[in-house]
Length: 137
Image (tube, rainbow, N blue to C red; front, side, top):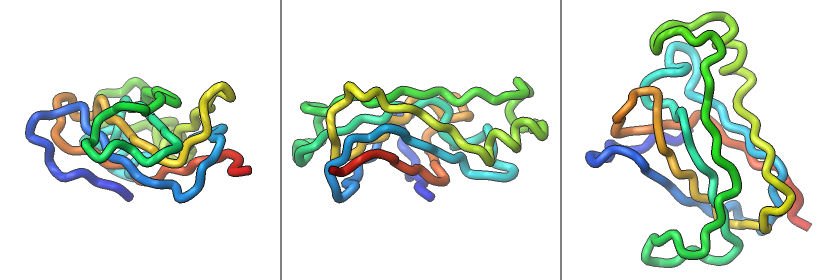
């Protein structure tokens, strides 16, 4: 699980990591922090996944990054934040799955840019788990 520290100027926020291998990604899956946290608080609601194959700029800039996917979580029941249906729980357990277009370049470094959480105007974010699928050959 990943959880940010508080960011006092709000969204967006981002973090970067090295997958350790250059790969052609085909799919990305993401799960929210489960149980009573589904579709609320700091769970990510809207985000982008960016990638690049070479070492990112040391200054933290966005130079050379390519947006691979953008995704918005939709609460199946449409119930207000803080209320969950069984359909919401089932979807939360299933996770979010995004196809990466085959036209995207191979990448090694991933940057997750969080645009919105379930607490609008929030200052922190969390992701339970992410998985990346593709071919490193």
